Length: 200
Image (cartoon, rainbow, N blue to C red; front, side, top):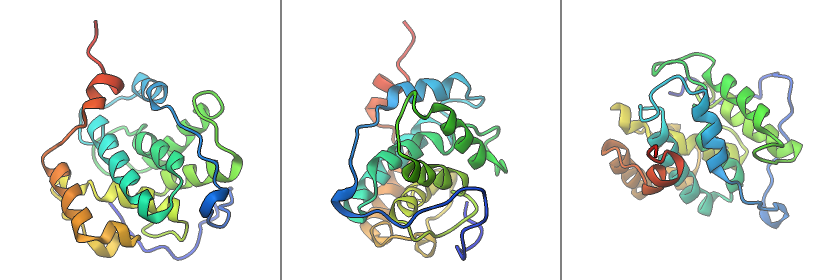
């Protein structure tokens, strides 16, 4: 969940550059299947648990919908969706799980995905701080966090628009669409066929 409003960037040993907008972003397709396999290879919780595959897929779908309106870098949105909870150790608060996810992402960089340094810093910041910082001026980071928060109804938590940082996420239609999918545990078909296919 969220705990405090964004005031200033904490000193964490990395630099978040100014927002990137417009056609200067070069979109390179991020292939998620290999990343999913790497995540599941060391995932200690149930893959279909409340912070597992279904959640990652709904965060991905929310994030991509939001990115159409916010201009977020969809490569980072896609990676955040499957990495932000990738190294959870329990289904509760699990202090430090964002940082562990960020560290795991660093180990996959340049083998399973490629991002330049500024974009990689955005990804690790988004993962590291998705539960302890409410708002960020960078539209890609905020889109990641809003996508995650839109899936809160799965844990019987109502989405509060006051803790959504983009106008696209605060749109009542978006909250309603995401909430229905979250409450009903909707899992996109590609999770079954591509992300976690049955053995054999």
